Amino acid sequence: MEIIICNKKEYSVIETISSNTQCTTYLVERENVKYKLVKFALVSLYQSSLKRRKLLKRYLTYVPKIIKKDKKNAILLLEHFDEETVLDTLVKEELKDDLFKMVFDFYRVCRVGKIELNYLPEYYVLHNKHLYYLADDMYDANKEHNFENFGIFYWLYSPQLIEYLKDKGLPVNMKRLLNKGELNKKIVLLSLLNW
Image (cartoon, rainbow, N blue to C red; front, side, top):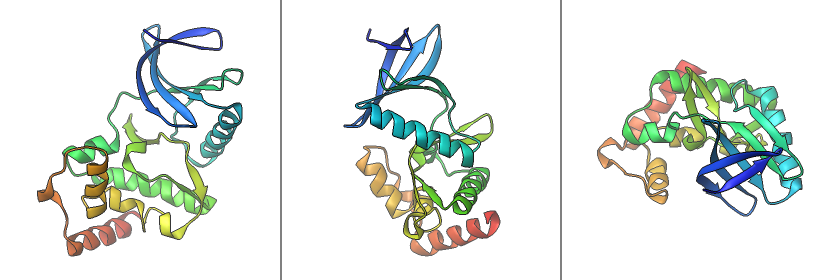
């Protein structure tokens, strides 16, 4: 079993969650407790992520806690949630209205702060009745990529979601696809109820 050292403590790798040129994210364990460990390719990438996470914490109450920081090895050890992501839920069933209320709450706070999040549902998890934002992605406000004009299409069974599911190799149920009229009606209704 692969071991990663963070602040002189050993963590056993359970699985590699994702990997790209900037970082590799692992599910790790120590003393029967699971964590998410992010190992960055460069210290500058580690510092940039840490800065974004601290800024996100100012705007959003529900982001994973930073458990340990290891600048020397460019590692962040984060709180891990066992619950499935919003995307996993969406593959199986329609999302409940309370999830939309929570994501609209995030969106409202972001509008005031003039920032955008990555609104793809794989970056959100419902934990202890609260919606958590798992990524550290944060952008300047952009009307074309905000939740109402972009993100919401990935939280409903839309053509955009179907393409996204196919790209990720996830199952698609074409019977659940909302036609354009149903989709627009649902978006307007959700906006009115949650805005």
